[in-house]
Image (cartoon, rainbow, N blue to C red; front, side, top):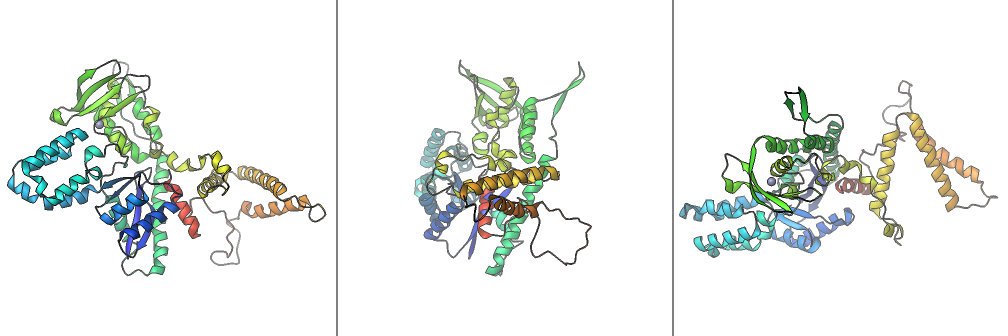
Length: 466
Ligand SMILES: [Zn+2]
């Protein structure tokens, strides 16, 4: 059986698992089944982009189940095939490699098409089936045609491969099916622990900002753009941003291409690099700061590139505009999940509130407990509010006759139900039992993996919804 993990990227840039499946074969109908089930457990949230190898069966299944998803072929797999199929051309023509590379590196679709025509005619590429087939599928791999897809900076399926090798520590071909789930849970717990570790580091550390000494007045100047990024981004993402910022402030130069009332165009790059490799940055002169770069780092990765930052600094932009800070690169990506408001159509939905909405509400509930459990007086207040809610709900739902059961007795039931959750054990108190009590009396943390299988799926997908 083949193990098929769905891999994504969290707010720290770590590889995470959306889910996984054991497949009996790799036929198109099997992939259709797999994707349909994946969609179901993702609460019908369609993926916007997918990276796979060039497997035809999988590609057809993606078209059927995720018709609107952008599908990219893994660049590493393409490279591997290129070596094999282009070798004769490299041997025959000394300039082939350079021309082919230049075509692939085209910034615009028009440029790519023009250059492709040139190399196709010059080197008679139409005689090669593999190259013709690749050209017909260029929408899945040509850089110029992929510049508008947000793929968190990925161009290969390497993360999936690394998740596979990560599972090697937990699973192997002789693992029995009944052991599989146990091992899978362990692997998931390990990934979650790594994410929580990064959350903790982000929450409990300050970003190291660059600064300049102003000798005349003897004070230190910190760049507001960098400071804002340090406040917003997670630790790892800030490190990526900082690299771009350092380049922008120390290594780049520019020349102005054009200037109009609406915008200014610059060519930006390093002095020691040929200008044909410099990037074109457009800065709009409107009230709202708008900057675009031909390298498309922001569109594909969600972080402003060094070229855009260089121009922003040059144009005296004094802070990082909030519309350039993607929430998915901040701690909010994880902790704001429960803030999702319930839409009116869901409240009026005859099938009831959706599972996803319930998940968000439960998530809020767990977070409230996490946030107020210390000091005890706070959680007692929360408990009183909850008891009041339960009382109100009970009165509304069950207007029981007074002669059968009094309202007061029902209220006491609620209080009895809630009381054990407030019970705090004295750690020094002696106990007559060994090991874990048969009935756990502590409140489960929202970060713990639920044992219920459905809840596991829900919990897993919840983290990925951000
Ligand atoms: Zn750029």
